[in-house]
Every structure is written in structure tokens, then in C-alpha cells.
Length: 560
Image (cartoon, rainbow, N blue to C red; front, side, top):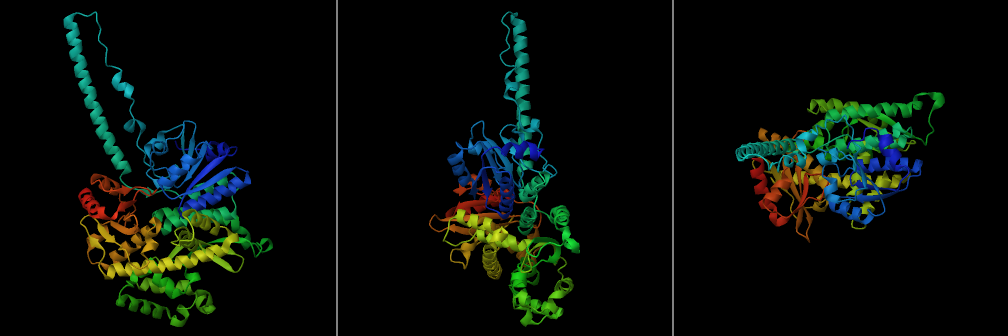
């Protein structure tokens, strides 16, 4: 059931209870969690936080804690499956689900007692009508067994014939209704996509409660930017949501413009920026940023010698000396930095890159520390998916969660260094895949497989890292190929997950459109491939390495 009044039907209900928070391992979920934690701290709400990276962890954690809690809050997990069927909870258990995954499962939508969906109704959900999906079994049985014993034999025979005709008609109607239901559900569940950021939903709750702070606003901005960085939402949706947050930024940070009312130097200041589409450039060198941003790397085709020459021409067109470009951005001449954005945008237009600048936000902690929202997204994601063996998944989750607080800037800077390593590895892997022709056309889709022993392959065993690599690889491949048909094809990518268990992670990436390709689970089921659908994103599965060819054959026949 959709919650219409978040304040009365959600917050005031859990305010006096002990609640359990299940939080998925993505940056938007972390930001939503930080906002909710801040609200709970204000009102002294008792809660337990449990990070979950997939369905198995969610089921295990629920079984462990279900006796102690009646109220469960799920952030970025649980909306797109039948939650009651998976968790089998007691009848007095209540789930509040704040999830960006779409489509929302119809059982969750029409369950009025146990499932409460914290989802914005203005998202275009297109949920099928109740009567098209659910039908009372009593309707089909109420007419049976109506024989009357006191009738004449001829009347009895006539009535029996009428009943047989009526039953046949009812069965036919039932079959037609079931066929129509299958078609409606197939159309509704065919594509996976994402709705409004959970962090934004939680920030709007804080605003309704008049408890919104600048820190909460920043977390909402980072949650939205995470969706944009990972191509989970359209550019139109991103710009619309940026407009909503921009009004809040003006409201919270307006005192900067009034000299009598200026904020102290140590205060957090958020500002709207029309900044460069270059990753981490303020914490890196401009040259490294240009080489490791997927947008510029794909447009210049930096995996080729010709692409490297084009980059040199681009820098020459701007009139920037290589010595300046290759040193840290912070150490560049101030005279060059003043007009850098305009210079880069002007030269980028000449080289066919019309979208070199993008609407975003930055945060200042005093004079020394300045971060763009995308910087924080990459740093937090790298901390969470760190391949370092010195900690468990929960440790990485807590470290990523801590890095979002301004009191832990050392962790954020550590995340930035990990992000640089990840971005370099991504571009090197893309160059390797394109130069060795690892991206092959399988008919209805493109396929690429990273082999064991590939440099940095373990950096891409986690779903978010592999998805980001796949999206960047697809963009680069589309820019490099002369085959126009490839622009319309999705990409299926596999990377080793566990050498010991012989498993691979398989992810599906849509073509240059907004929907996610589904059907991989069906392909695995139809060939009895040994697969595990453990991730909250339905486009990610784990598969036994030896079943890969069977799975691909089934997928080809399914999508043909």
C-alpha cells in the first residue's frame, strides 16, 4: 500500500517503537539512511541498523531479528519482489519500504496491512488495476452444487444442461482473464528502471517535520547524484530533481549573500554549480581527469593512438601548457584556473562535445575543503566496494557511511584515492576490451567476458563496479564502431566472482535508452543453469562459469 501522509502514517508510527533498518549497499541508500539516522537522533528513536547486500543477507538478518521487532524499514530493497512471500513474516509485522527499484511488485501495492510503500506517487508507476490482477476464488465456486431435488426429471435435465453451459462459459472467461492477466503483468514487469532517489524522499520527510538541516540536504544531493552517475535516471528526471533541490539550497544557504549575516568560515556551505563533466578533477590533475572520464575518453577514443593525438590537439586549442595540465589541479596557476571552465567548454564544442558542463552542487567546509557531489559519490562507492581483504562487507559499509559525515574527511580523502584507482582500472579495462575485440555481437545483444587473470579483474567482481564498467564500455564501443545497429543493442557482461566456487557475475546493460533489459533470470531457468538471483537489481545474477554458454544460447533465443 502506498503511504500518502509520510508524517502520520510512517514517522509518527515508528517514533515510539524500536525499529530495524535494512539498508542496501548503494550510495543513495546510505544517504537516505544518514538522513533517517539524524531524524531518529532528534526524536530519540531506538533503532538497529543492518546493512544487506542481497536477498540472502536480508532473509538471514530478518530471521535473526524478527522476534525482537515488529517494525522494519527497508531502504532501496524489497519493493520489486513479493516481500511477504520471500520473508514469510508473522501477521503483526509491518514493513516500511523506501525503494527506487521499479516496477513495484503488485502484491506489495495492494497489501493494505503489512506493506507500507514510502514511494512518491508523482512517479509514473502505471500499476495495473486490482481487478485485472486479482480475482476472488469464491466467485468461481458459488454457482456450483445448486441441484434441486424436488424437480421433474425433464426440468432437472434442462437445468443440468444450463449449468454445464454456464460452467463452460465461466471456465472460458477464467482462461481469458488469466491470459489477459499474464499479458498485463508481462508488460508491467518487462523492464526495470529507477524512481525518485530514496535520499530525496527522506529529505522531504525531514522538511515536512521542519527538521531539515544543511547536512541532510547535502546527503539528498549526493543520493540524486549517485543515480545520475550510474545512469539510473534520465537526464530530464535529473534536471527536474536538481531544480527541486536548488530551491532548498537557496533557502538554507542564502545568508552568504548578506554581508551582515555571513556564515562563519567553518560552516558547511552548499552552492549550485554549472560545472565540468570531469571526474575528481579538483582532486587530481586535469590530464588524468580527462583520460579517466568516460564521456571524454569515449569521444576522443583514447584507447587509440589517434585518440591520444586528438587529446593533445584539444589541450593545444585551449592553450594550456602540458606542465600545468599534468600537475595537481590545486597547484595550477590561478590565472589559468579562473577561466578554465569557459576555456574547456569552448574547445569541447569544437571537438563535438556539447555536454561538457552539467548542473551540480558543491560543498565547502571552511576555505580548505571543497567537494563536488560526484566526488563524494565516487569516493563513497569505492569505499563500499573496496576489494581490500582487511575487512568484511559490513566494515566497508560502515566506513562508507562514516565518510559522509563532515567529521570524517580523512575517510573521504581515502575514498577519493580508491576512486582514482578504480577509474584508472576501468579505462584500462575498456581499452583492453576494445583493442582485443572482446566485445562481440551475439545477434540480439552484445557480449563481453572478463577472463580470470585480467589485470584488476577483482575490482569488478562487485555489481555496482561491474555495472559502471559495462555502461562506460558500451558508450566507448558505440563511439568506436561503424556498425549503426550496435547502438540499438544491449550489452551483457560477465566477470569472475569467486575462483573457488567457479562463479561469475553477469550484468545486463540497456542500449542508449532508459530501460533495463530483463529476461536473464528466465534464460537461466529455461536451461536449468545454476544461477543465484541474489542482488536487489534484477539485471544482475550470479552464474556457474561452466553454465555460461548454455545461458547465452537461451538468452539469444529469448531475445530473438
